[in-house]
Image (cartoon, rainbow, N blue to C red; front, side, top):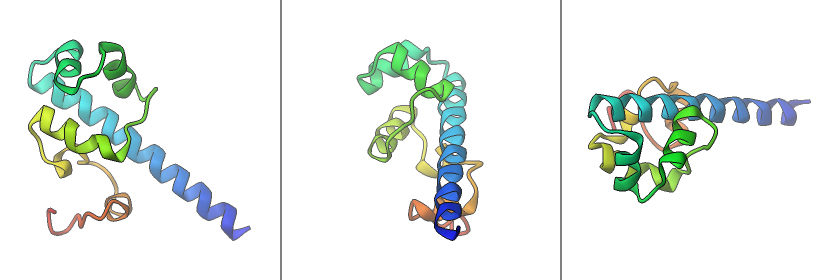
Length: 99
């Protein structure tokens, strides 16, 4: 059934995107020498919430992305590095233009 297939594809894309974001948050935090507690303080989150995000146990909502980027001092595209082009386009980003 076509509709089910499309829904499965959307679920797969969001899983893939969630994994990219989780890896990026962990990597960028480590690059800056921040502990999970320090990043949590910047975001107004607990250390547990940061840990859950980094492990993929908690997904990040779209409205949280700008604050995370600001706290890590990176662009949204840097945070989403490694995401496939289709996922980036679904967020209104053009992977070819760097925006």
